[in-house]
Amino acid sequence: MGCPVGATLQSSYLSCPFLGEANGLRFSPVSAPRVAVVRKIVECKESRIGKQPITVPSNVTLTMAGQDLKVKGPLGELALTYPREIKLEKEESGALRVKKAVETRRANQMHGLFRTLTDNMVVGVSKGFEKRLQLVGTGYRAAIEGKDIVLNLGFSHPVRMAIPSGLQVKVEENTRIIVSGYDKSEIGQFAASIRKWRPPEPYKGKGVKYADEIVRRKEGKAGKKK
Image 1: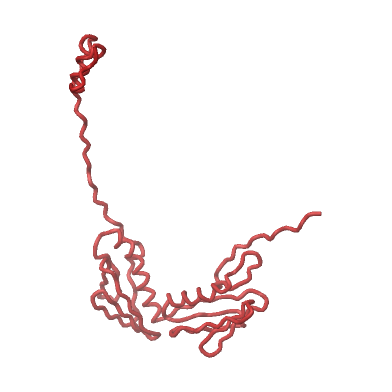
Image 2: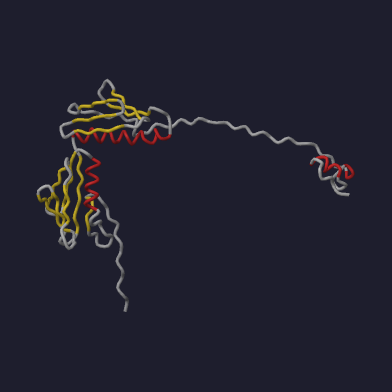
């Protein structure tokens, strides 16, 4: 005789001739264990770069208004707007500190970044930055013509690029280019735009490379063996 269909699981087991009391089996209800969930609040660690103070020279003037900062020095003036997760504090010693306004993952990610950007502004308007490039290749040369830099990089025509305002470009021995100024981001952007015309190739190393760049060389195809 089969088990009743409408009965519960426990009663159906007991009434079955194979699993019921006729076979000496007895079932007791077992409650499922409860799992406790514990939420642990993890505090974001402070960035090693972000917690370092920024030394402000005597010839640099800072102007803070809300989330905006203006830095003025002998070489120029720069401005930066900070997100709401970041705040600025000026100490009595004159040093500047970039701190987190809230403890979130986004604030932790931006802490070190905006501290570096702020330090680049202070150093840029007081001392300046420079980026050096090297032209490698037969016939490759550069020259300054007015407010433009002219590059001969093996094309059918020379490449002419306008020098952005605020940057100074010098050419030494026709193959070395020096880009200088007070805005580090603009210097890097203009140097990268020069390099992209002829990036160094890995076989002979010909092209435009940074002065401190190491070009990984590849071995050319071997000649056919006889």
